Image (tube, rainbow, N blue to C red):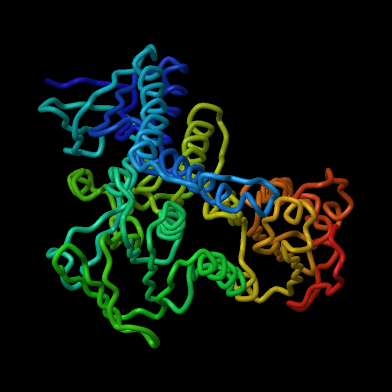
Length: 468
């Protein structure tokens, strides 16, 4: 049997449901197909449950250092692993159930549970039936990459999804990968009481960031007792009784780490390998990401790819922005583009890293004259008052145009404070205007105009010892 709709959306992640809402509100008939769980990665195995764990880990950490703030915790701090799991699952389940209820109540929407495959550019099959539409939107997200490491098939391992199913605290968690997902789980489980080792091929953590940011993050994690094994080559795995041995050829230290659990955190791959994209003539890159133009349309007219599967963003907010771009162009007569988006993201260790725009390394590579302003969090009054002074603030600007090119705030509240700079960049403000803003004291954001006032043509920042 063949069913015809105005639009078909494959995947109910961050872009799909909102797009369905806009299209149905415009009077269109829409089929939304989801083969697993409504809400995608963010709601089920990403942002929502992991940030719930981050909050629990922060509570444990704060309780342990309560005496530093003049508060006495007499009975010590214990972690209830089953309660941790129940809490993060409850929060994720409630978010998913609320989303699903909204979708099922949406007039003009047909919500289908099943695995969709293309049979033509404008037709798919699901559950043995054919669906056709003039517009098809792919929103299938991604999953954890499993690298071809020696011994990978001989040992049990965890990913960002399966680790959420643990109802116990690992004795020794070995994290393979020193980037965002790996670092967040490393700190979470260290604060829950696990011994934690991070194994990273590169010479520093999160290599996309500037060296001083990477170094500061390494110092934060090391100070909490997390072992860092950098420059790890020829990583290999082997089972050893009830443990897993991770072989690493590092410049320093033991050639092996024996852990109770191994977490693979070495990147993501798109869920596009079983969608029949070849049948639709859709072009992907060598990693499977669907290739799209600046308007999110693929090489086949009427077929769009939104969210993580297009390789043009790897975050919930970029997926949602993909929906905004597609809806604005198709329904509002606008001409919005992916290339207009200023990249911003956060690393949710504690303290968090908020990032926007270019790093200093990227800005220098562009050949333009740049200015740099920095300030350690030890000179931010809000951080001192909270007793959380790890990290630094950094702003990169164009010396000629006076526009801010990028910024990093690694410190308490950094994931929120970075939005002052993100908003200024989106508004096209020069740093001269931002310099004269009058922010609220005491906040982290109040130091942004101060750092702007310290912009220099070198990496050096002002050396005064005042705390503002």
